Image (cartoon, rainbow, N blue to C red):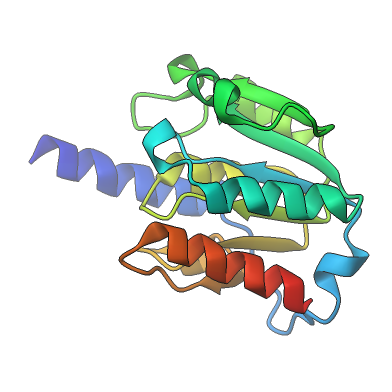
Length: 176
C-alpha cells in the first residue's frame, strides 16, 4: 500500500516537474536524418540489454550522430567499445526516495541539448521517463506504457517479447 502511494506521488511530481508540454502538431519527417545529437537512456538491468539495443546504438553511430548514453555502471561491459560516444554513468544515489532524478542530476542534464532522446526502457520506469525530459529536445521516443503520453511525443508499441519492441524501434528509425 505504501509503495502504491509512493508511486502515485512520484508520477504526479514527474508529470508536474519534468513532463514537457507537447506541441499539438509535430512533423516527424526526417527527424532522424536531421538529428545530429542523440541521447539514449539504456535499461537499468543487464538482463534487459539485448542484441537489438546494441544494434540501435550501432545504427545511430553508423549514421554519424553524436551519441550520448546514460547507463548504470553494470552495463559498461556489455556496451560496444569500438564506438565513440559520450556517457553519463548513473547510480542509485542519483535517485530520490520517490525514484525520481535528484536535483544534482537534473541540474547536470539541463545543460545539454539533443536533437533526439530515446528511452529504451520498455517497462514503466518513472526515473528514465523523467530523465528523458530534462535536456532540451524536440523529439522524445519511448515505448507505450502507463502515462507515457506525458513524456514522449513518439511512442513505439510494447510487445510481449521486448526484443521485438526494440526491433520495431530500429525499423522506425530506418524509416525516417
